[in-house]
Length: 270
Ligand code: SF4
Image (cartoon, rainbow, N blue to C red):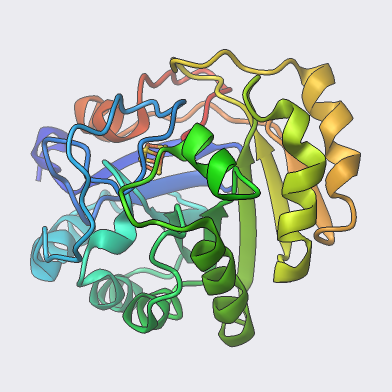
């Protein structure tokens, strides 16, 4: 399979949190497919909210691409993410388990956690080795301000879903918080909200790739970091971690999911 033929896998990219990460997009829709419309989203505005779980891509098509990866490709992780919210894919769990049959790398899911309270979503996520869950808000108004969710999405339900999932999920559960000028002053209230989840790690991010929001400076993010010290055993910021240059297999498919992509270090999705 030529690099141009990949439709469902993208990257690898060098993630500040994960190392060399191959992305699998279980949605692979032309239009962004999400139940959030985050003000900083690098994929552009959400034109239509998706709230129902569907099969977007057959598992065997994804496995066909995974099996065709170059033998010399060295990866640290495989991550389910892409053009929207991966838990909207009804066959996410089947995909994770099928990839595990043919690859040895740890497999993760980057999620906005909107559906994490659902039993079927929890069952899918239990198959992953690590979960990175978005937590940018502390109440319904701040959720609206930062993430502009689909109608009916409630902050308290997301938080309760995270706590319930934590009880079942014994592998790495990290919270990722995107800070911009809009929620910078809310750090202490976000920390209070997430403290009881039992997260293994907190990752503090700011939009370093093209986004409608300006990033915070290294000094601003460093000042926020201690506020989260009681929320998880490890707290990291995007500015602290080393990135290595890495070339994606298919630049076009990577840019579609990851926003503008530079092979130079620095830059992140969510
Ligand atoms: S940042 Fe992620 S969760 Fe937010 S709108 Fe974009 S794709 Fe959806």
